[in-house]
Image (cartoon, rainbow, N blue to C red):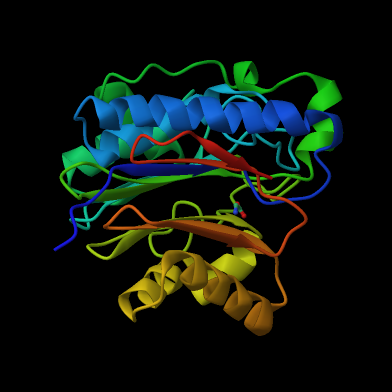
Amino acid sequence: MVAPRPAIIVHGGAGRGSGEWREARLAGCLKAAAIGWTALESGRTALDAVGEAVAALEDDPLFNAGTGSSLNRAGEVEMDAALMSDTLEAGAVASVAGIRNPIRLARKILEDGRHVLLTGRGACDFARQAGIPLVPPETLVTQAQHERWKQDHGTVGCVAVDREGHLAAGTSTGGTPRKLPGRVGDTPLIGCGTYGNGDGAASCTGQGEAIIKVVLAKTSVDQLTSGLAPMEAARQAVALLARRTGGQAGVILVDRLGVVGYAHNTEEMPLCHIIGGEEPVTVF
Ligand code: GLY
């Protein structure tokens, strides 16, 4: 039996045309992966590592999640996030405002265990009870000069395996720009934008309406279960999405041995992976 290698891979959203932001976005992915890797290296769980890495991306205004989230048609931030472990424990939030790190709220819901997905006001009430402070929603809106750029990008995510061989997946997003208020994408829907089980963990990015229709995260992990290597599993899953929906998306994957895979049919999907303590690898 091959021993698992700790591994982590993060993505900063599938999209197009980062232009002048390209290097900064890659640096953001590298920083988030390093934060997650430090957690894994110190013996913390994959769930901890994924939560820390996604929170770092949420705090970086260059990504469409947490601070820097897209605005809906009413000019408001409404965010979605989910976290799942290979034990099938899961927590998710949809359409939340005034939460600096939706992924941390998703973790509290996972730990609480009564429900998987809380939305809007109920999620914010839960946050207060769980000791997560609410912030004025406008503090999550970044400078107007990022507005055009933000329209082309979406979602952050991370998957990891820890040294015990446990897997986790997490995803966070502000959703699509100018979405109708109340619209929920794939990110917080378990199996669609985020999924993990004993075979693998997956986090998706791209057009939520297309991703939901092919349950892309679970479809990707199912490809691993059927025997494909992670890179081929990711490619097959994205090809299936393109064939069946005509949509655009990306996915990152890790299997329980710490082998990573990724694929997208968009112009770009910045990502960074760190495997077994090797040098970080960034890919645009
Ligand atoms: N993939 C993120 C969204 O559609 O909301």
